[in-house]
Amino acid sequence: TAGGLTAVSLFRADPAPAPPAVQPQPQLQPVAPGPTDNPLVAKSSFGWLPEEVTGVEYAAGGHGDTTLAIGRGELPPMLWLSVSDREPPAPRDLSGEPKSIPQRVGDRDGHWVTADANDPLNHGDSYLRWPTADGRWAQLHAYYLARPDLQQVLVRVAEGATFANRGVPLPLRIASLPPSFHLSDAYTSRRPDQDGVPWKLVLQYSANGALATINVAPPGAGRKDGLGVPRCVKKNGLEACVGIDKEKAAGITAQELLSRITLLGTDESKWTAHVLSP
View 1: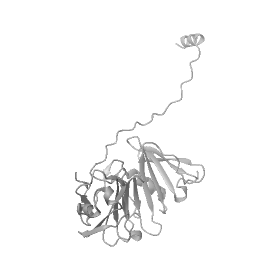
View 2: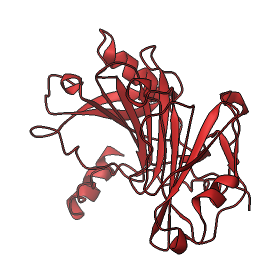
View 3: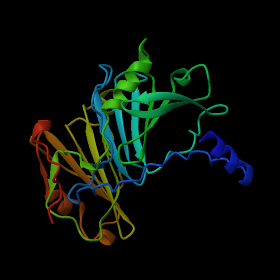
View 4: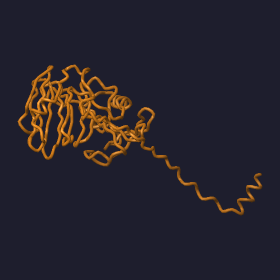
């Protein structure tokens, strides 16, 4: 009764105030490992992209794992997609104190990171972050993309992105690599205005202090990445070149490594995610 409650309150100290509610932190779910027979494993993938984008580039290795949607022109639009176990610190090139502006991404609460509290798009150098379904943090960084509906476009790109380790289909097979070969960097480029060809692939391996570089592209590419005198072959509409700066240390010559490569042609639907044979 009310009287009973009053009587009890006379003999019992006021209860301590309830502690503030703690928002549960999402638990990281284990991410399936990437394939071991592909040197270029993407951790993030785009879904829908605006028409300004003409290609998607991937990179893995010592310089980081990135997925980049890119357009054409002297200052091509660029949309960088990445994922990390926890939210990264504020971008280094952000001028001023970083501000966080809430933004819903699908069914998740994300936010823009900006130096201007009145402009979530940060004057066209835009950062959108949101938690993924497996408890990690995704980031979309966009610049040189100008359109009246930019904010809605970037949210739509973010909503279509997926995050899982996936072997990127590549235009070659490699019969085998020496056990001393360790991947340094792997990347694709889709910058015809810069490279002189629609795309190129570069694989770099370290081996006992030597550097081995494989370049694959349609014939006509400008400079080749890597060190050493390249050995090249043209087949199935593609050119492959191998350079090794210290063949003795690597335990294989550039010509021997080149002979282990099979080129799959220019039809990207015929490329393979299973690149390396044991």
